[in-house]
Image (cartoon, rainbow, N blue to C red; front, side, top):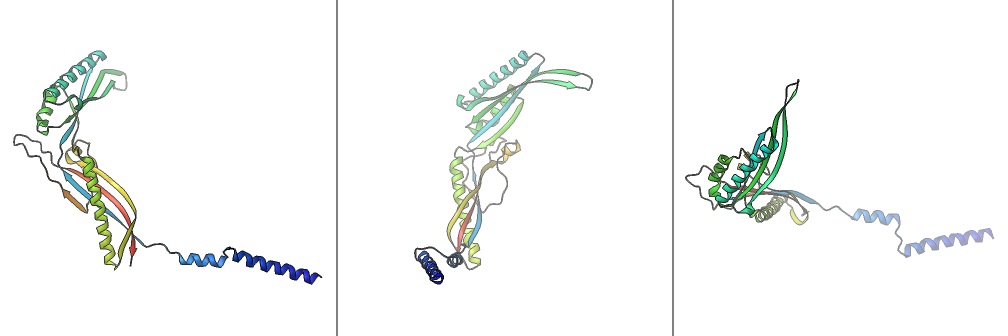
Length: 262
């Protein structure tokens, strides 16, 4: 009797195992076999750099006015008088109101410390004016007029382009093209070809001008480029001027990963 029970139980186990396999359950050997058939795709990663040089078509000038006096109201009144004179000067040079902005106001009491007593120097009032100059031929005369009118700080001069977005897009497209050409050349040296791109990443998109860099407002940095494109310049040098606007550099850098094929 015990032998018949054991045989019946063993038969049930065999049927159960066969049923599980037939119903689609995967055993451990099949998992190992499936893993062996999978492979990581071979890739090649490259970067592409591009630089476009464009002529500026506007100048952003940031001027500062600082006055001081022992009496706060007197210091502020003197500052207001100078600022009103500078605003009038800007209007006389044809700068539209929308391109003139008073951007900053600061009042600071200053003291002279000599380790024995703290001596009050006075109240210092500072204001900032930001101008957008569209006619670049007026720049030098306008700056001279502002300095004579009472501005005692030139805080920034930036040569800019109003079509920066378009030039950034063009530089980015050139950078991607440079990355693809580099990948093709590198793969060919190894007897390989590139396939479809797997990842594309922008690493840098910036601009700078040499002049603005001297004043501390430069953007971007120096980098060797795969592609340098000069869009030309519509500006001509004024023989009576000592200012040469030069060119603005618009940079782009991308990283692309391609499939590598036989």
